[in-house]
Picture 1 (cartoon, rainbow, N blue to C red):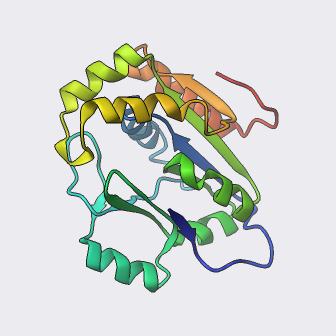
Picture 2: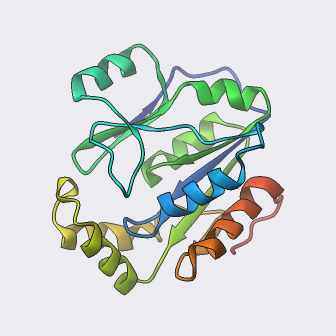
Length: 199
């Protein structure tokens, strides 16, 4: 289930929306954190803090709202994009629309279920799939042991399914040192490639 703010008369631009997707355990948050650190002095690149109806942890930094408060924020139009997964709700702040209208690049960690919606709403969208082999995902999920996301076997099955369903513009296999993946992600964020490639 996903939704956006009310329909616009035209696609939102001229800035870019970089959507980071990938299976649980792929290391999305690690690469995003590394890229954010590298972009500290680049005001034209924005990493909005998403809102989740779950407490944050060492593996995922986000703002936390209870389900009632989240629903109130949703009704008030405070999310540009939102979705449900693993029994929780996730939201991207509505402020990204202003950033994109101002020509900034916005980098968000999202569910693949909102990709089509985002492509219909924003003028320039790049989808980056961060992934890893199943055995690596399994080991990372076992270390994380986040019970609020449900059974680890089910999570792994959902994770493997991600690759074939998100139609990414770029693919980053996150199996080397994190610095390698961060550099690859920065290439997408900063360089605005105009052609469809995998890295």
